[in-house]
Image (cartoon, rainbow, N blue to C red; front, side):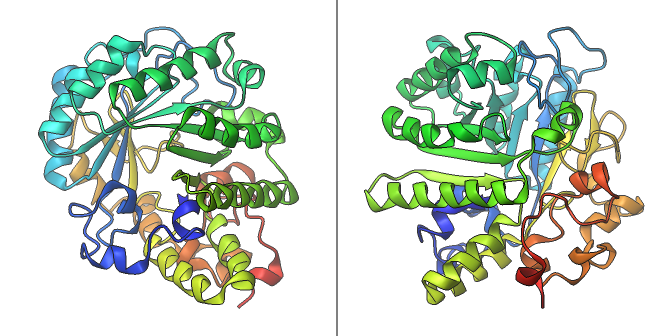
Length: 392
């Protein structure tokens, strides 16, 4: 996760983190990525069921009942363990989490335990009553997926009317006083809509947007051909930086982030190095605090059936099941070779990743993408930095 507005526009400084000792429990949510203790943010896919059929869905969800989902009792026990372990944020995801009957109870329990609770949703099931309830139980944030403007989004999500329903959900959440933001997965099908997404932020007064790079997992492997090439990625990242700066310069406070491609950090640094070397040095300090890809370290996943994964995209490998052993025990058990290697991966990186000068701010980028194309420790094919840019 690369905070474009934080880094490029200088809305945070290295000293901001030091005031909190870089401890996750002490830091406000917008600074958590810079914490030193790296207690994992946990994505809990509370259900696999979903009312939409998105072309890039990593969980390959459908609108049907699935067996073996954690019961309410098992879910509450999971939350108890996560809180005891020091997990700062629990992200309720799916499928579509709002299709789970006890979601409100689970969110309420997480909040009672002192964790920040957020949900990732397509938004189509949020009406004003539900938004008011989310506000009442203290939900910290609602991330609503919107992968383009009306026609683009509805094709991407497999249902006509999905865009309008999502936009209504944004307005309902704002009216209820719940912080809300957009989640946008960049690919060839929707890249031309990125400028309009920035227009939408301004028009609808939406405070936050996360631009995700495509990850080759689940149905996402079926649209690998639609991923941007390196030139296209550089162009859209430049566009995101430019539009973020424009908003900032006009006094419009928007949090803009890119997610799932840690090459964005060095790329932003190299750009700033030409524009403002002093700020570039501060960006590098912040990137080192961020520490790059955090799969198996600062982010983890619990599936609907209780399986523990290195992140939400790594569904083909499980470290254990919370029905049998606590998440905290599974997460700290480095007798599993993959868990051990992910926590100390740099010695295993191959090819140009093994000699890259930005290892300490990228940490090898996304291993799932590498595994889907060349091999687990091979270079991430989505890294768009040139050999000259990464040379030591």
